[in-house]
Length: 194
Image (cartoon, rainbow, N blue to C red; front, side, top):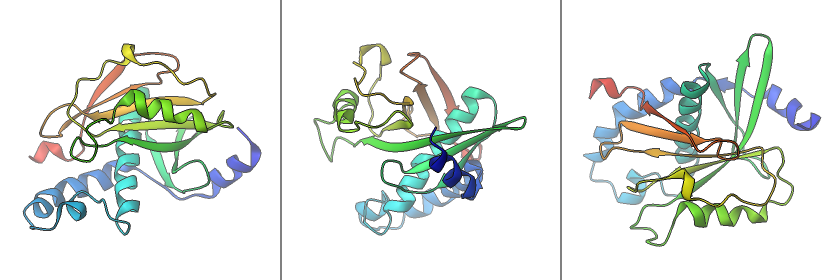
């Protein structure tokens, strides 16, 4: 990792994503019943974009925590080629992931969107050896990581995550796809309440 990135990462404020996600989970029924237009309910306006990305980043960090068995904290910092920084402290060692979020949008926004198409678009990242890509699968589909063709650009990591039940309580995280095609299941924090 380059020294400048590491210095930036050390200056960020980090938070545990669980509290943020649990608070969002409690607010979701109110938002759903609000009658607000769909773009606002789904955080798809320019003003709400930051919160949409924060939610997705928090879900990725929460899933990654379950996979590695240590808390993965979220540092909100959008830069030239990444959307946030994930931090894990094991003993006295700090590990950072500089993560670019991508999305396979719901079918009502694009019927043709797919995991492979999103991966194919990663070819534009020519200097990306420190970049981890987290691809949010935001549509009901069965995902088989063995069917994808990996990008030819050098990446630090490639992950796919998304809800695997229609009530969006159960989620999965697959990856790092550059080294394994395995995945884990995890529950949305706060979903025990309903």
